[in-house]
Image 1 (cartoon, rainbow over the protein chains, first blue to last red):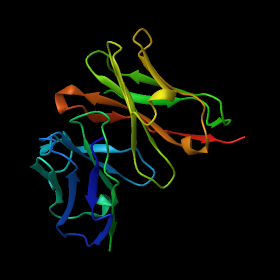
Image 2: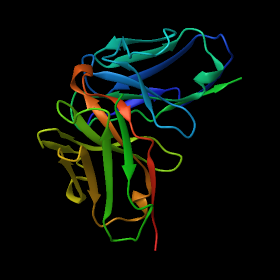
Image 3: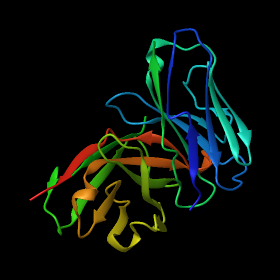
Length: 107
Length: 119
């Protein structure tokens, strides 16, 4: 299986801050990388697919980059509604594995 | 707008079979992957497997010996069975749509259903 490792596991930031979450794959996955947001007590929703493509309806403050083994999710200006856990997922090869999650708290 | 809704028992006894159904409304099953994930309380997401609309399946090797995913195109539903369950199978189970136009990203999710394994 392809292992996905996110860092940090948790972080706290203030409204308006720029936030970066990283995801590393155990082998090269090209750009077969997706990012999800899971708000408390809700189902996940896709933010970014194919490493850098913004899903329809997702605010433009979210962006993704990277290829190969190293990927980044950036929130350019943190909003209070961004309180959530963020997951990366590879869809290069089944089983389609997720990272362990990054819990984002608002200061 | 496509919506997914999971249904099934919330409590299953150890050694028995967990059975869930996901109903797809507002769109067709054709052309997509239909997926199951689970999330134990306080933990992360685990991909269980998926079925293409033509019936081709792919499972997580960690669960493959106990899991079956099936699709019923006439009812716009797909299902999950997990055999010989233990307490470790207690989780919120989600169904979702995998979109080949988005490298199989899961672009529509059900709300999730909590399943507890206990006698």
